Image 1 (tube, helix red, strand yellow):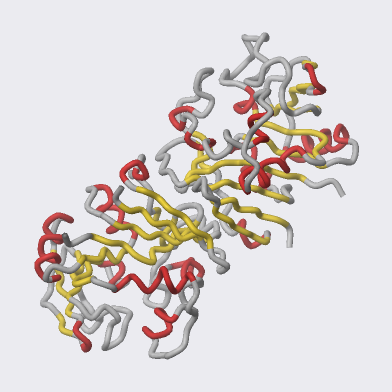
Image 2: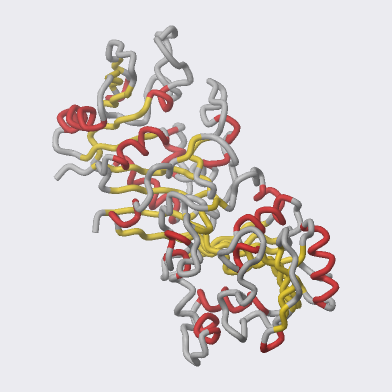
Length: 214
Length: 214
């Protein structure tokens, strides 16, 4: 059965998954790089940047599963770019350069559909205005029996959790008090009761939490 | 130097340190016992209940330091009782019976001072209307050179953190989404920058975090 998964999703101890004031230069607003410092040294992240080396400890062991067995991603428009409203910059194809790390179809949720864009390396961005259920139907079809990843941002992950569509949720709790931005947990009271929850802290200081179906 | 410490302070992953709807029967409102299930089996908690046994693993190792070297506690009125406004029930002396587990002077912050109450076992409740700084001055004097514990609830801990009066903060992050209640972290953006932070997860599922002065 094709599962729906969330991976490497960093949240501050006060529950924010992104900061305030997203711009092209600062995709995570005032959070800067602080939510993802644990991720940068991993081999998974380093290889996305074209480097061969990278850490191979527990952070990497957890991080590298993000793309294993995944056949499509669904992301919110705010993960794709900093622009809001009708598209004006049609040259913008995300923060990831000409060869994005997804290598699968990627469905971008937006109220302003536009033509699909085929990138190098197997990533194709599709822009759809759809409910979580309908987006998931399309992504599952595109995934050819593999799993579907919900890539973020917080609003999108929260929507899929609220609809109980997520089977595997990996959160990295980062020990910083971000203070403002977008909260992941709002409206999800009792979420833990639907899952088996495991936690492990690594020397980078983060706590990896997995929420899986019991 | 006498330090100011917070211990065994449980917070949900969405940042709530107590639930909504405190009553005499439910000191933590709709959270019930869920924030403190990790604590109950520990020897520290069991001895408070008059039992000899109790767990002696890492949860206990962390929990038992709460009273070591502490000469006074400061608590908010909502930790002391569920009543608000002028005191009507003068027979209420807290949730802890005739011999409370503090065994030191305890300063209860309230806008409605009342006469001090001497309990069995060395605990005396003093009711004071004071700023955090003034409460700390009185507690330090009463502690006779020992440390002062800020006992909670969330509003009180947050006030002392906001004034940068806390030297040691122990938080137990509980993997539940409480959804509503009183938040610990509000208004504390950047708190982590003032501390050295360490985290460890235990088999009970909680993550113990210590914030200490660098």
